[in-house]
Length: 257
Image 1: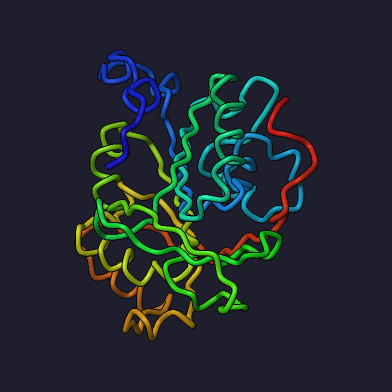
Image 2 (image 1 turned 45 degrees about the vertical axis):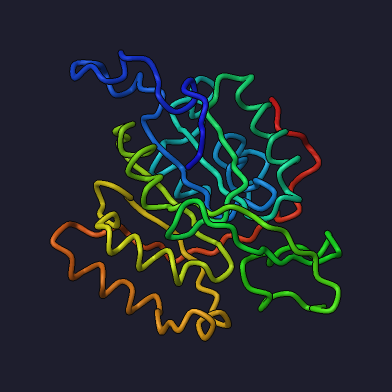
């Protein structure tokens, strides 16, 4: 399980006071970024003016409120997971910059899964410039004779949501899932644990990597997944039709303002 700094996850007792104005909560909203890559989606949360053509921006405005001169989404806590360790130097640079500005951002090098404490092999392109499809399968690696491999620990996403997200009592949780095939493990696991409810995960975007279905013996599609959620007793998490791949190489301006 992640060992998180208590100053980033468990905030002051005043957050738990029932009469405390929600607008002053440190984690009034949560963005859960699964498959952070270079951290661009999290940057879009806090510096949207750098990414004016990004489709995700309208959803950040809808769920978190638009950024203004006085509102820089200081009440949005972002948690990112990236399985490829080669991205962690960059991600930690972004994390440090935002924390220094009073924002709550955390990136961790875990493979999102249905178990915590396992070790999986993550495959990535040896050519770092092409390294967009790193995951626990080599399905998306073009040159399999020249792959780079890493041993990476797993994290149970359901456990993380229960122990680190729900105690924050956020008003809304927005989740982006782009985990290179592992969604065929993680989505049924979240559904089994009853976590894909609107009051737990408000809305999410999913990229299904169809070539990985055979490896996971899955027949899951977006329509069939929505059908599973509709059969729940709770109001289901909203599944948004969005795959925002804009600005994948990020912008030249460093995470600052």
